[in-house]
Length: 305
Image (cartoon, rainbow, N blue to C red; front, side, top):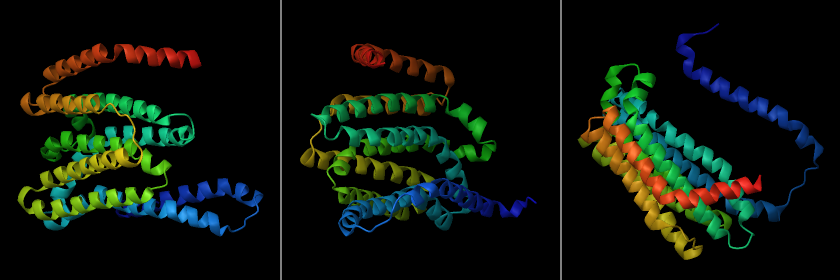
């Protein structure tokens, strides 16, 4: 029987049940193979995997600790308002996660081919192109999304942080694309170092500025952490595994998208008509600047099919 005060436990139970079901499906595969321990393989896996584990923990700090600190240092209400509006950045998060899950196996498959750096650069370029469009589009329709997903108007007071959090999530997505260099060169310890630095930024900025600026400090800390991680990954990548990114055009699209989004939301007060006009201008600009490259890309994909 459903119990209303048992909601958190239901989430735990559902996750355990899903994991158990997955294990049951995979058990036949385990039993078909003879198990033996390889110390050489184990050492290689630990050298590669342990830094990834550290990076994962640091990522959790970046994503979760701002809400915890807001709860402890301000109030549960402030943390709840921030968390509700923070979730509206899920569209960028889903885009980045789906892209990463699909493209990482491809990155590894290309590693031994001739000049894979050109492929990596092109993929990151198109990721930024589409991500810029998503960022601006979400900000333009933000009031509509807020009415759909945040029913309580009290929570709308933190909507101003959404463009900041969207840009932060965008930087994280770019970071994951840039991180290909340390993954295919087995230098995952760089990922641990960079992610840990991002976690330190998150903690320090939140601890110092939350008493002064509330949830704005948390939003800006997230942007600063992910922006720093993105920048450091690019800088180290240039030294250890140079990839010819179209840096000027990438930065142009990122800053232009955020600039137009800020203009739409903060200057035009999130009015739909001016926002739609700015989005149309951005689409026209992309069409004019990228027409030849997009046409060549679609022609090549069509030829493959």
